[in-house]
Length: 72
Image (cartoon, rainbow, N blue to C red):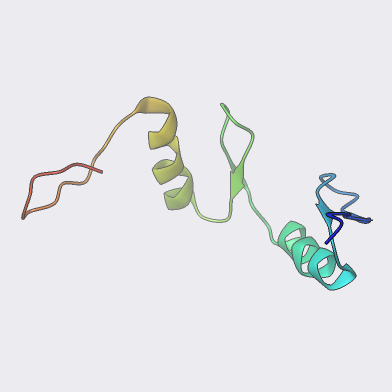
């Protein structure tokens, strides 16, 4: 319960409490993510995921609930 995170990812610097959590995290870096957000630097494995993410920057809410009309 000390909050210590002695295991560090050499790729991004994120730290973990256990080596198993670090190993699981490191697998994320092995996946190809060729679609990169120019505003934030986050990358995605599918272009459609990048397009959805870009709505965060534009404020666009392209989807509408047919029942209540709320956009998201």
